Image (cartoon, rainbow, N blue to C red; front, top):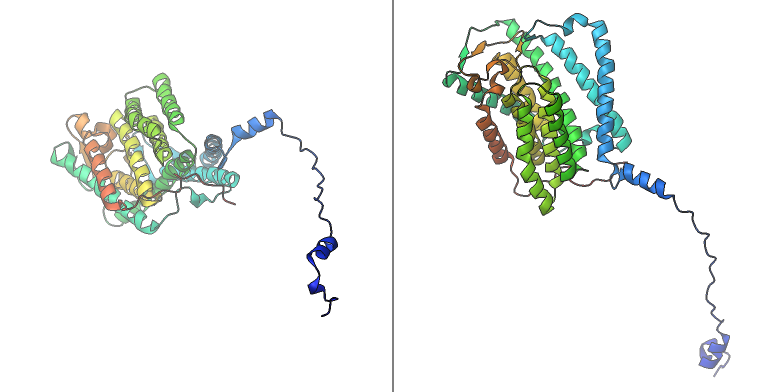
Length: 392
């Protein structure tokens, strides 16, 4: 037997030949200096879990929009001053076109700045989602059908009369296309600012108390500075959203921030329409209520494309096709001619169909139809309802 074979080494010999194991010694790292409490508080005030807090984002957006509109409006007034002034009680397609281009460019500029700061794409603000072309087209159809139903009900009740056709031949195509382009710009501008950027941004960082504060501030501002009955439409939409939003707050239900944001943005949409001189309280409430329906459409379809199409088509049918008043103004170059008759509460008076009490049941029908057509068997969570990390 070969005792020199290392495999036959005894346990004692193996133990004595094993190198002694000593615990590793580590050099302690020098203590890192902690941030001052003031710096930590400042970061907490400015940044949240999703990056820049929603309140700061909204402030930057609003200030940037006003700045761009002031600069672009001054440029437009300098180069085309005559197109921006029309006869009292009338709106011209050229003048409105320039105003809408200024507004849309200002909003795009403001959104681009905010998107850069937040490290997002412009399309991330409720402009993505499935079947966008289909939803846009169905919104176009829905807006025209809804306005036609309202005009038909006014005519049937004797609160609206039709006059002679105002255009003929190639004029119909020319003015129809012009007003169509103009109201597409309106849809993109107004929906892009309220239902796209503001709704998306507020939904990622608002709760009941912030929404209550915003709606309360708008109501207080209207009470102190607004004249006329239109502000009562703002009071009404703010009051209708109070209890449901508070119950959502108590239940802590998932996605409640989306509806808190919808309450605030819908009230805001009605509030900004109080600047239109021809609006009564029903017309202001209508603007706010349809704004809420547009928020519902985002929840159901996943984007604002249905709302953009509906908004553009509704305004086109009202202003060009039927020739009714819109916020007290009648368009130059409308196809049909209509005039209100009877009590303004039912006919809408100088406000147009949007100022008629008949529009309230129509709004409920639009909401019901939207839910029935676009309801989902599984709940859809729109991009703005979930807490999202900033996109790189």
